[in-house]
Amino acid sequence: MDPIRNPFAPGAGQRPPELAGRERELTAFEVVLQRVARGRPERSLVLTGLRGVGKTVLLGELRSMAVKHRWGAGKIEARPDAELRRPLSAALHRAIRDLAVRHRAPDRVEEVLGVLKAFALRSNKADAKLRDRWQPGIDVPAAQGRADSGDIEIDLVELFTDVAELAADVGTGVALLIDEIQDLQPDDVSALCAACHELSQSGAPLVVVGAGLPHVPAVLSASKSYSERLFRYVRIDRLNRAEADRAVLAPIEREDAGIEPEALDALFDASGGYPYFIQAYAKAAWDAAPDDPITVQDVQVAAPEAEQELAVGFFGSRYERATPAEREYLRAMAELTQGRDESAGTSDVAVYLGRKPSSLSPARDSLMKKGLVYSAERGHIAFTVPHFGHYLLSRAVD
Image (cartoon, rainbow, N blue to C red; front, side, top):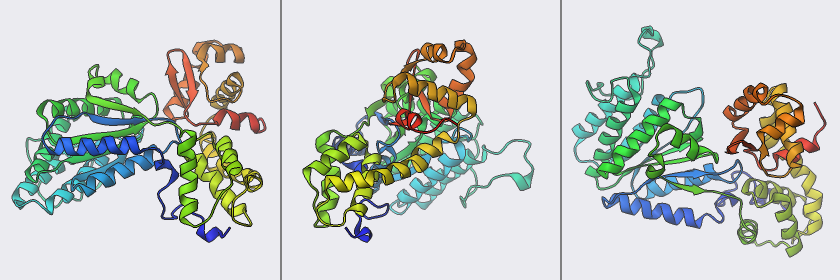
């Protein structure tokens, strides 16, 4: 098969496998957009799931949907070592620009931009020298006495309120999309929950759409006990067999090519239905196939290449971030679960390693902060990356 035509290659221009089987989520967000635009209350949305299930791609599609509805939209990726003010300011600046082109009162737009600038400038430390002070690219004077108290919870409520009112002026709304939401700092999580609570009380047309790992609901709940009422949680999981087949068949058929049923069986077995893996194995199978249609032999020949690519770019890049002590913990989890995508008891890990549970807490906590594991339930730990246990068992001991 012609590798230039490979519909599974990055940037191939086709709808990626990550969106196959996500019609329910897309339809639900369509309803959210319409309800909020009509002034009806609606909860913000949080997508949760393991790595490789397509949360980030889905988040991007939801942003595109908001833009098509003429909403203001901004997207950020949370980072554990960064406060929320700067990236949030940039995202909302983008959203306000989306709204400004249709707003009939430039003074009103500038007023909100002034509030946003005041909010953004509070990210500078009080003792920072003038040359070290960050300046947001907002060409209006900063407002005084609005969203500039320095208390992120107070300031975010005021900022969200003003931006939402600007959207209401033009009959639409604002969508703020936050990827890796579990990496927000505790104060920022608390502020976000408080702002969403205020918006839900007033019915303001601004929704937050977050995406993160499976333990995000616990992170939000630990911050504000009422968070479970603020967000609608949607679990994004692997594709079922019919959805996985469609993810493979649709791109192939658009290229007027085919694939044998046995090859589809082999692709599903290899990928486990995880969209990222489906794309990796299908791409390799296309490149390996000398003729049309793709056969099970083509999939088998291509599997080592796909696995090597995953080992370097998907698994290896994460494993390399772990310290020796953390790698020991990860290997113990893999051994206890026999490489399956299951959780391991934290006490079982301690017994396996012949250590006291308290002595392993630093390694476990660090792995959680790095996003390599999460607390599946009390006393249990699981990999955030599908097939990671199998990968660990298949590689030589460091």
